[in-house]
Image (tube, rainbow, N blue to C red; front, side, top):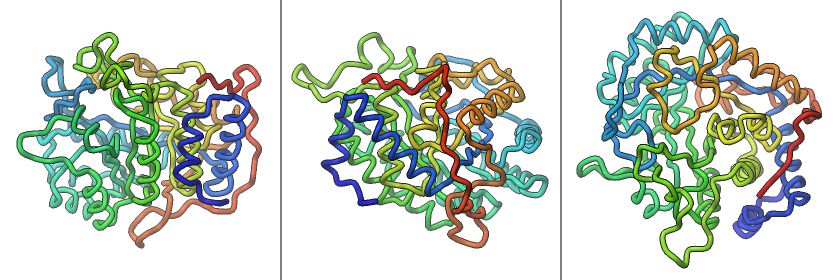
Length: 379
């Protein structure tokens, strides 16, 4: 398939005709089937701490918010990992705010314990940590690191992510360093950040390819109401009265970005995100799978902590227990004629110590849209 040009990606992001977009989504779905097959991999997400030193203008975990906080104990994290095995997941994701109360040696011991007790791949999503910490965790057995750069535009990034002291964030450089350490690397962006243009989003998608990302998460911009960008009217406002190219934080725009990312990065793992399911609670997840996604990330965080880890409001499946959520997701996957993947489901084996590659030759099942929930595209 010919590589998409900058102009073609821009055209598709601005496309609003439902019939044309159905063709785009079908192309992305075929690329997904060809390159990663029909398996949907489940990654069990454990949100191990809600503490964060950052002051991001949209995130419910920002340090300035007065709210109950928690850090999980070693045994609580291990219980979550064991639950992931019992539910048939191949990967556990340990996520938190940027919390330096999570000591590197403490987490390294937990990583080693999970590796000793289970066959799970381990993904870390802990923000910007020191190189020595990242190396320690990799040596302990962590397989992947997820660090979303959110937007590749430096000015837009700085506008919504205040500095932490004198430190300057360079997530692109850190992603490259993570690659050098032997991690599979994941990143992603928010769609609909106030001030974000289609040109910026094109550059985001092109950067995915340049970084050769193994996993790419794309979701709508959702600001917590108790943040500077969560105030009424702010989320839809551009940077000035003449600003006319604001990217909407809509399901349609997210689906276009997911589909184009699949075409540009055909072998990457792309989750149908919880944030997408939040803006369309009925069948947002399925729509993501029909537009190129091949991963779900169900939450395994213990119930007492879930309400304290609200990055944005109205998070999908917040009140479902892990068993109930697992059964629901498997039903959704099967309704599309797809299958649940087994094993770690890594994108590619870069070194002998990393996760095994996914099969490249798999049965080609034609996804059947749920007859009660067709894929309807609304710009």
